[in-house]
Length: 572
Image 1 (cartoon, rainbow, N blue to C red):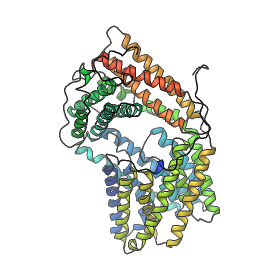
Image 2 (cartoon, helix red, strand yellow):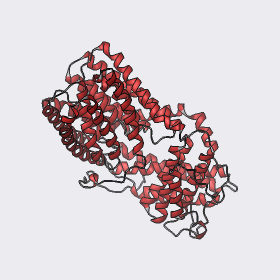
Image 3 (cartoon, rainbow, N blue to C red):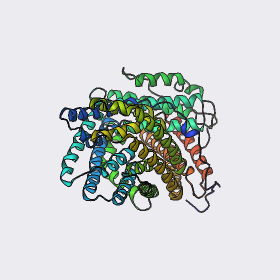
Image 4 (cartoon, helix red, strand yellow):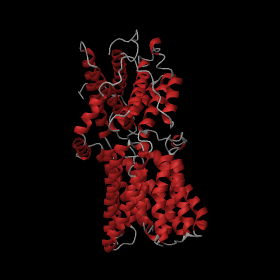
């Protein structure tokens, strides 16, 4: 960015909300998929261990079973690789924890190892963007393993159990491809149609940004899905219609041109979304004006991804973890916060302070404001969850099947509730985590409850304090880079538009590149805006870049014939 960049003034310390983080949202449209997957992936090894009377090994299979929570938003071809990577990462994390636990009994050393693991897991999950649920599952499992009694000779067998349960998780998450192989792409397309309909119904900055993000996610899902099929071709045409609806209203809130109205009818878009989500055939819309059956550019882009792919992905991962990366301050927060939470918990008399480490690690989001929100949610949910645990503990001790049943129920309930709000899901997660300890033998209820409450308060308090004190001034740098990338993408699109006879493939590729840069710009701006101790942000330039970018998107759609020209649409 040049020295002449106009910057807005904003306070270094922003007011932190109290009520808003606790409000309930609408549940995810696919909450039941991770919920059912984790139940099946947990039930199989649990019942096998029950059959051989070795429920004391549940902690090791649970590590692999929880891998079934990942990848449900990805197309199956990509999901197979992603979940396999999750399983391998889980086994590596468990290996480090179990070896450390077998080599030392020093709580101070184990806390340090747990904090290092939590920081590494946070940075790796953020760099690869694997999630939800992100790094908290890894930290929960590996931190608990650090404080479990362990001998070095037992480690290979315990890791084999984790790996075996991980294989079951992989089969559970990838298996539905046999029945409905385009399911993830259908859901992504339906979200894009619904978001476009919301924008047409109520044009505005918020609905437009949501629609752009949903359309971009749908294209990414289709590009990552593998070879084209008739269903994917129909989905591509539906996404083109969502783009046409979005572009048709992008002329500075001007009315949609009459010729574009049929494609921009919100009820029609919502009807297509409902049919796309359902199990029946995908709706086959009429080709958007100016398109052909072979959608411009997408096959070439899909082929290019196959030839690039993994080497470029490895390079991007290394860049995100290299010096200068905006992820490093977040990693430093996790390391310092988790270590301090563990040591304060130890000083308070907790024998195995892993829950303080997990609580602190779970707080760290993209910025201080979001971390504060998570601290409120986590504290409320854990304290209420402890009460639920106290109520069900006597019944769970009536037999091993009752214990298994409660764990499965709370695992399902956690995924069913957590998309409404994190605190609501934590009410189910807390008793499940405490009940897992019962597989290794009964513990005094008062001690379990007291340690958990103390660890929650310490972890949340110390964790949010570390988030406030460890600055992340690189968030502004990320925003400036995103702003420059958006300017370049827009210039590229304008250049393509200026060509005497631009090819449809060139215009389509330029449009998708600009859409992706606008999504990244919005994410970077939201992250920087919620960060403390930040230098002034170029918010006027961000708003101007977004407005210009959306006008250019509309111009490319007009040039391709997706929408009718708007009379007042001037400069691009």
